Length: 202
View 1 (cartoon, rainbow, N blue to C red):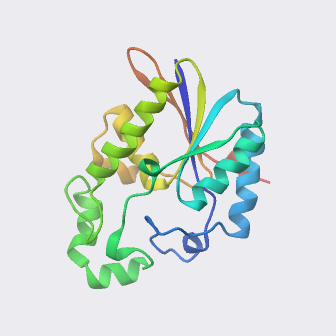
View 2 (cartoon, rainbow, N blue to C red):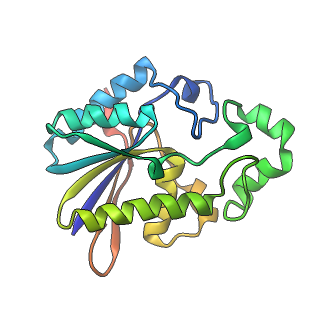
């Protein structure tokens, strides 16, 4: 059995401002850095063999904070990036819904089909991200691996792992530095933890 610990990156300034980030390389806020240290402390007791991250800095820095507790390097993979929000990156809900009302509505009602203007589909996200995770499972048989990524990406990976239709991707909550655990067995994949943020509580 290979255990994949999926962690969403810490908070960014754009998270606070409710802006869509996608492939834009935004930095962690002070709160995001604090969250990264808290999740690193929480995972310090795990027997982690390797740490991987999206190549965007908000994920890399969160991953480096986790990896430091285990004396490990971080390997960055572009395939673990957030969905590309294209023309919507840097905009808020109000700006997107005002200019692309039909496409924005379809993002939540026909998630499996809609293409974000100038960006990706969730099918493309699922294919690249789930493919990357499958590669890590093959590379680390019997080990525990930490993977730091993004909210949409983690949702898509969980849908792929459990064979959940992508139209349900928004039914899966992902808070900043949430911990999720997938166990990859020969016959099945088991989700043993979802969106756990107890390390952030006082």
